[in-house]
Length: 302
Image: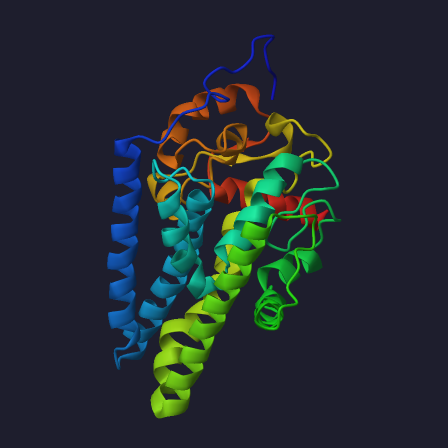
């Protein structure tokens, strides 16, 4: 893509969260709650098709919840700071994503994108050789769930440590507390199953979780893969996908990833207005997710 001598202006502009932005985020939470309720009702039906549809819907909502959590960890959902953790912690529980741990590593990812210090929270490393095997391992990254259980045990025994540098005592304490909360949720689910309600746990959490792992991978993958990961220029190391209203909603604006990296604390609902500048100046812009996955398939099939 060619560029002109001019430079983008709106793309890198900062913006504070407004009352209207808060209302948009609260509406997204309400939609999440409503669709999750529908998923629960369907998943518990005796008809196989309805039950499967419900579990798929729950998997989609658990994936969507992590994308909403992503906005919360950037503190761009509310005007005050304190509600972000209050909302962010439960949003990650179904997919076993600990809010403050995610926040610490993800903000480090933003600071160091394009350098060896990049520490994206989810395991697929776009800097390594791109092969079909690597993509399959990322798609089926169930070992991450075992790592979470390991970290719960470390938190419970006072042995949890941040692996990518130093963090404050406050952040360390918050991470440990949230791992203990997640551990308590897992123990509660195990107790419910042991009490004879294993099908409830299976339908409402375990099977949707199995589906959500690859679903979430497919949402996250386009962000930086096949981009110039040795560059610190967001116009070269990140990808945006215009997408549809549905993909923008479902990914909570993750498709507009250049816009997000250019000004990471801007409320997600403000990002679409910045996309025209992205199209004009950035190197990696796709019209749809299908276009991206076609490009990816050609790249790994060479």
